[in-house]
Length: 288
Image (cartoon, rainbow, N blue to C red; front, side, top):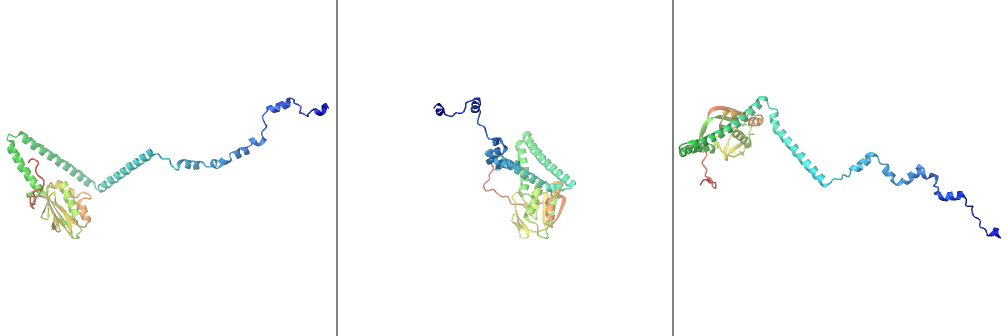
């Protein structure tokens, strides 16, 4: 009876207790390299990227902030402005880059002469002021200076005839290629060189003078003139003639149009074409 009631049980020896305390054994292949590769299977495409591909992903698409974009636009504008300025300086100096040494020396002399003329004019005005301040009869001295100034203004306005040293420039235009703007450039160059009175084919040139094309000829203040175009100019011949002959200047431009230009210096040039004195419609003296 006692043998039937006993249930079979495993002996509880020291080995049984040791097995319960130890962790459950892992399969032998759990630490194998293949297992790791299977676990990392979903990340395989990213690990397969090359270094160049990862660099490209980091650079594109670019991540630009608003401040960086504004700085880039400002730098672009600054660079563009500098490029335009350099190009413009290169164009302005191209005419002189191929000039001969004697031409460059003449241009420098002309600039020095212009500076000297301005200084002389300034000194003359200062002398007039001193005479007015130191004269015992200031009223009489003022009248003399006013009369002299009136003559000078009359010459500039074309209401008074003038004579003095200067040059005569004759332009032969047999091809009919010389246009009004070319003659206007000549007048402007002469004025810049110190011309005090100019007459073109019997027409007095003043501050309001305009030139226009009229068929194969040119009109000056509405007066049609034909070639040869003859400029009579009063001024310092040593300044006027070099100003016309600078490289890329008036003479070279006209000669490119197959015109013939002759410049002659003279100790006496007469400019006797007169303009009627015009009364301004609106302007009045501020001293009234």
